Amino acid sequence: MMLAMTASGTLALAGCKGIAALGPVPGIGPGVRALDRAIRGEELIIASYQAAITALAGKAGPSAIASGVLAEHQRHLSALRSRLVLPPRLATASPAPSPVPPALPPGAHRVLAALAGAERAASARLLNELLLAPPPLAQLMASIAASEAAHAVILAQARGA
Amino acid sequence: MRGARLTRASGGPGAGRAAARAAVAALQAALAAEQAASYGYGVVGSHLAGSPSKFAAAAADCVAHERARDSLAALITARGAAPRPAEVAYRMPVAVASPGAAVSLAVLLEQQVEAAYLAMVAQPEAEIRAFGARQMQAAAVRAARWNGRSQAFPGLGDRA
Image (tube, rainbow over all chains, first blue to last red; front, side, top):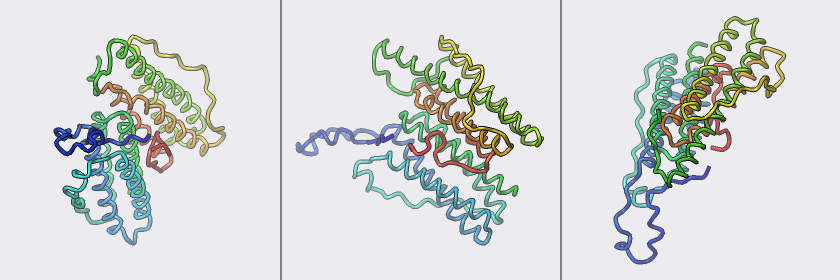
């Protein structure tokens, strides 16, 4: 599945006639915006896991589970980013600030519960976003939403263990 | 009831008929996977009779697949097509002779179902797409309950 979404499909056709030949810059479609929100969502949840792994230092079991799930989120983010192609102007205009994850509660048990809640919320958001996406991206988003729902199960099992 | 279309129609009535055929084909493929899973969970449950909690989990998951199967049949009928009947019996992807193998089979059945729903998620009709995505989520949850593991890309595997 190699679908790159571009917000500037007409630019390459304009040749060397100068900027005036380009006409108005095409708007960014709902699919690109849905993809952008999905990317930001993954960045945020990755930041949450990085904070959680720091908070879980010394708790071998929960820490290992969080690290395993974090690795899957990093694969999600790579797959989503590979679908996004923005014109240089948009890509460099305002570098997105690093996401600031919500503060984690004290205690390994509550950290895992907070992560599980974040996973369920992210999975539910993707289920809505994928309705706006072109088919290959919708399939990727559905797969990621399913993965995140499974993460919530694993985190709940880790709390019970 | 037809859901809203998500993409621009790209042609006349011929294109509309082709889209309707593609939607029914995606529904039939998911139906076939749910029929196989419903059968397969009978095999799973028969090897988990020694554990009341695991047997109950297999029974609950079997019911979930039967409900999805019936919903898919209704979606197909609503589009003027006939749901393809189930096979009399199915060859299981692994031989099952122990509770451990039964759990492995349950996970495999869920993974087959996840992959089968991908074609529905590619459909433009919101009702079909949302149903497929919700069922992929449910299958991944059931698989994780069985084996305590997740996958980065359920349904897609290494194709993501």
